[in-house]
Image (cartoon, rainbow, N blue to C red; front, side):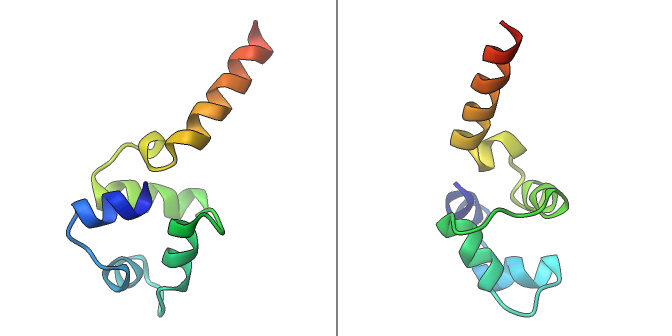
Length: 74
């Protein structure tokens, strides 16, 4: 969903990288391809930049974690 929200915000990977203080787009590319996850501070920055709730950026992962927690508390 990262790519979707980046495009919705009208940003290129290079724009996101610059705004997050990176010198290259490697991290942004890896995050979008699912090869790596952003740190919590970077995830919050992305959510702010894209004006999207954090749980929407990694919706499948969020649903999986929520399901696991619900099963543990049942």
